[in-house]
Amino acid sequence: MLKRFKYALMLNLLPPLIYLFLLCLKGVSKIRYVYGDSFRAIVERGENVIICFWHGRLLMMPFANLRARARCS
Image (cartoon, rainbow, N blue to C red; front, top):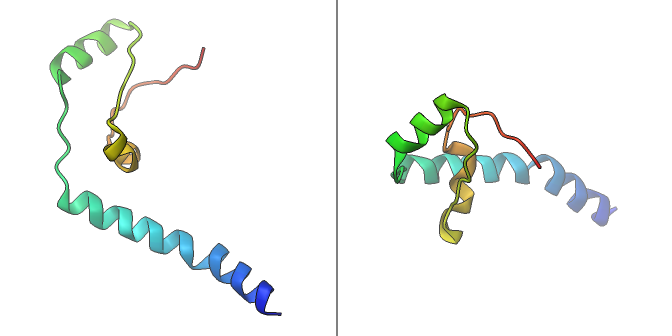
């Protein structure tokens, strides 16, 4: 019974709390685009780019809002 309760708690309560934490983190962080103008120009031409994040900033990837189409190869 306790195991089912823990599982239900992790499944229903933990994801919204983590999302709320990430939104708070976004609110106090500053997103800086290095070579942002060059990136936009390359995307507008339809060329391929590689986007990098530092290890310490990986949690902010969903909030980067790059608005470019991604391709896997």
